[in-house]
Each structure stands twice: as structure tokens, then as C-alpha cells.
Length: 255
Ligand SMILES: Nc1ncnc2c1ncn2[C@@H]1O[C@H](COP(=O)(O)OP(=O)(O)OP(=O)(O)O)[C@@H](O)[C@H]1O
Ligand SMILES: [Mg+2]
Image (cartoon, rainbow, N blue to C red; front, side, top):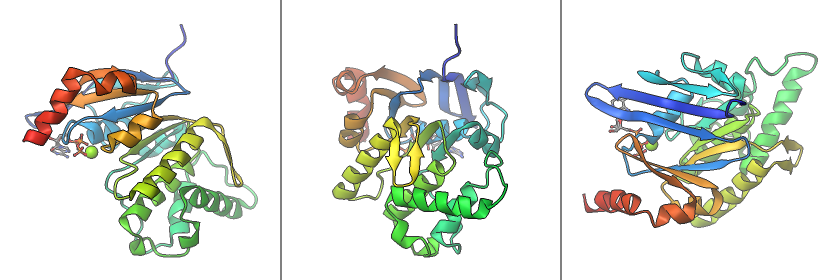
């Protein structure tokens, strides 16, 4: 039997007495786009930080293409082909946008031979183009709006050529028109193809999002977290009528 493309098994993370991620297991296939939802504090961002090596799990394993990622540093994980964007963006504020993206291309996986600076600059430009902020390339990151910082995060992530891309609330701070545009771009990036000079082979994705209506349109499968545990998993159609999921969300609104 071949190993799953991406597999999380019995993953647990505690913060003192609080179990933020509790015994979570799931897999993602190379051609899948998986939505990860759940009320505030459900453990979604903690799960992303565990996968990206920013937090260390107390228990469990994270395997990518058959190799264990647990215990690896964030840069090792990026080098293996997983990139993530974070809910709270932390760019190099004084550096121009393009330089912020070029830094992401410095991962050792990229070869530094010949005219490598020109190559990563071209790559960074393509990533900015894809993210829709190429006209801001020379602005310092400190000048960006919240929505544009989200796009910068996406540009930085895709510039590392990931095989698995994890997006933590990509639509946060975007208006409906921007959301729709970004959703289309994300779908295209997932399927693969040519974007200007950027060529994408397609990539697996895990998307965390509170704007459920937008998310449900683009994902194949949804995993629902509540108090650190998976309470439901299924197609978007199944999830929207799942009583446990409705209960979890109504409980939040009522609180
Ligand atoms: N570094 C930390 N130290 C202590 N508690 C933390 C830490 N990070 C997260 N938590 C707690 O862990 C729980 C899960 O938080 P997490 O940020 O993963 O939730 P989330 O599902 O991403 O929520 P949101 O939808 O609001 O982004 C919350 O109760 C949160 O307060
Ligand atoms: Mg979060």
C-alpha cells in the first residue's frame, strides 16, 4: 500500500490545561482541496502551526509523501514542499513587497547558480502578478492594506513552489468582489496551468475560512473542528446539513 500524500495522525497540542488540538487524524490527496472550518477557538490555526513546524505537537504524527515532519523546522517543511499563509501576517515592513517575496524564494531548495537573483526576481514578480498586487511591487510592506497583506502572504507562499498549500483565512479583510476574484485564482492555482510566466503543476490545498459560502463553492471536502476535535467530515453538501455542525455554529452565535 502506498503512503497517503499527506497524513495527520492522532495529533494533540495542549496549552497548559487547554487542549487546543485533540487527537486529530485526517489525510489529504494530491489533487484535493480540503476546507477546514470550525467556530472561533476551534484549533484551526493551531493545527496549521503544528503542520508548518511553528508549534511542536505533544503527541501524534504528520507525514508528507511518506516522511515524518514532526520535529522538523519550518524551513525544512517549506523545502519539502508545504507552504502556508498565516492569519496574522508578519512581513518585513520596511522592505519592498517584491523583496518580501524574493526572501521566500531563498529556500535552499531553489538552486543558486548563474543569474539566480534575476531568476528569483522574475519568480517573485510572477507570484505578485498572480496575487494581484504587482503594481505595488516597490512599496514597503508597511504601506499595504489588510487585504493586500493577505495577497502578499499568498504570493510569498506560492513563490516556494509548494505541492501542498495551506491558507489560513485567505478572504479575511477582502470585500466581496476581491473575495470572488481570489477564490477564482485559488481554484485555478489548485488545478494548475499557466499564469503569465508562472506555471503551476496544480497543488493540494487546505483552506481555513470563516466565509463559509465562498469556501463551500471551491472545496471538494470539508473537515469541521470544534473544541480541538473533528466533529464532522464530508462533502460541502453533507456538511451544511450536518446537525452537529449546525449546533456548533449556532452555539457560537448564541454565546
Ligand atoms: N500560544 C497559545 N497559548 C495559549 N493558548 C493558545 C495559544 N494559541 C492558541 N491558543 C488557544 O487555543 C485555542 C485554539 O486557538 P486557535 O487559534 O487554533 O483557534 P482557531 O480555530 O484558529 O480560531 P479563529 O477562528 O478565531 O482563528 C483557543 O482557545 C486559543 O485561545
Ligand atoms: Mg485561527
